[in-house]
Image (cartoon, rainbow, N blue to C red; front, side, top):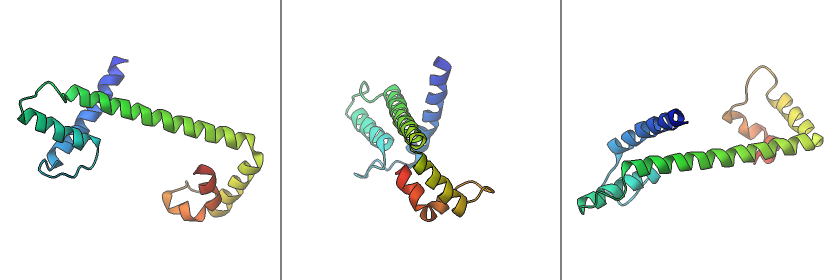
Length: 124
């Protein structure tokens, strides 16, 4: 399990490094959690506080947020599949709309969203 954690941390480190290059530390505006953390870390370090807002804390928070998002998404998708499996009428209408609008020769893309109102209603 440690190798997985290390792989996640390596991924997060690449993202954090990319953020560090683009952060405007003088701006009040922040674009995301990582940027807010980095700004607060720099502010505290300027005040002599090197114990708060450590890099490992940022890595751990990124890991927590990653898994929280994955679990929520996974559970939502699982329940959606269960719903469709238990409602054959919904399943049939989905298939009809997908066959009519997309066919079987290609995958669905985001460009198809407006042409699939029933599918959107079921998914959302």
